[in-house]
Image (tube, rainbow, N blue to C red):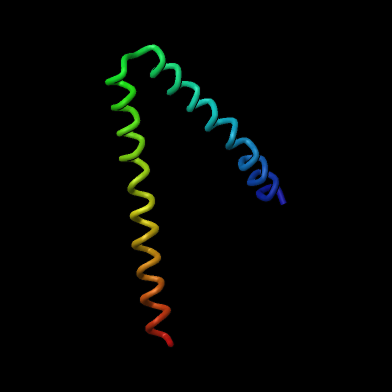
Length: 70
């Protein structure tokens, strides 16, 4: 029962943690030049790429396993 409340409270706190990080990034970009902003955007896209690749690979193997059982 305690783990259920802990899980729910951690999920509810997640948006507050992510908004704090975005505000920090925004402050850094606003204080810098355009090259730094472009570098930051490139880094964000680079970091976002890997979860999508991993999900695609996992989906492919699940699909392949699903087709094999039929």
